Every structure is written in structure tokens, then in C-alpha cells.
Image (cartoon, rainbow, N blue to C red; front, side, top):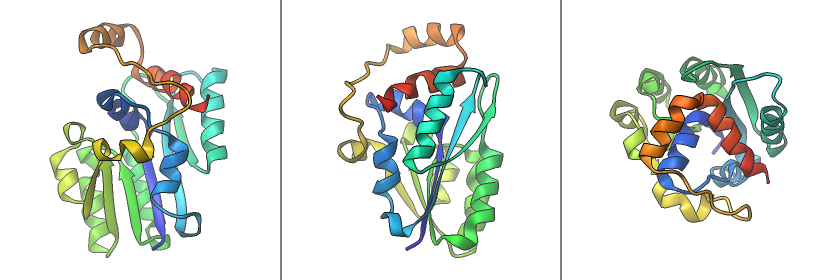
Length: 189
């Protein structure tokens, strides 16, 4: 079955923090479709500083892994729902199944339209971070908590996430999109 993958990078970062383990993006791209069945894998990544070499290295690594990277400069909360919805609808004639990693309820109407077109939608996420209506619009919900053995990044050590109080203090000091790209940089090592 021809499959397309759509990953909201900010959502996956939040999910990894919640889970306490890092997601290996190389494994993710191969897990949901064998190469001959993969139409494309889209990764939506915020850029906080277009001159930051580390961010560019991360984006380049995603491209080398096989992702089509959709990035844009963001300040504050990175929101990619419009890009994701557009890519889902425009590419729909080229795939039968979509695997979406997002928790935004703003995509529920798009998923309903795709299902009305006969497309199969698998939603990848963490229940606490996933809008109930979005979950209601998918054919299958894949809980990341059950996917640790298949998706956990190994070889670079396990990142320890701070407590929620420490995280709240740090969030005041740093832009969330910048934190995402800085922490995901570790996945390349």
C-alpha cells in the first residue's frame, strides 16, 4: 500500500519529552512503509535563526535520511497545520495511507475530507498531547508509548528530561522552536 509520512517536528519533540526517550527519525521513516511503498516522508521543522549552523545541519541530516523538509522561520509557537493540511490534500492522489504525527485538532477537518476520499489515516502520537477530535477522524491510532522498542534512538545515550518545574522555568528563558532544534541535533550523533 502506497504510504506517505507527515511528521510535525514540534509535536514529536513534545512527545519525546513526555515519553522520556528520543525518537530515531531514521527508524521512523522505515518503520511505516518499506522503501518501495513509501511515496514521501514530510518533516515540518521550525527555524529560529536562519544563520544557525546547527539548525541547518539538523535539517540537512533529515534530507539525507530521506525526508522532504518543510521549514520556516518562526518566533514563538511553531504552527505548521496549514502546511501539513496542504501537503496532505495536494499529495493525496499519490498515496493510499498517510501516517501523521501531530496532535492538533486543527487538522481534524482535513482528515475527515481525506477519509471521505477513501484514504486510510493512521495517527501517531501520545494520548495526552493529541486532540480527541483529531483522534476520532483517523482509521488507526498508534500510541508512541507502545513503540519504544521500534523507534527509540540508541547509541547516543539517553537524554534525561528535567522535571516539569525546571522545564517551566527554562521555557521562560528559551524559545520553544529553538529548544526543539537544539535537542533534536543530538539525534544526529
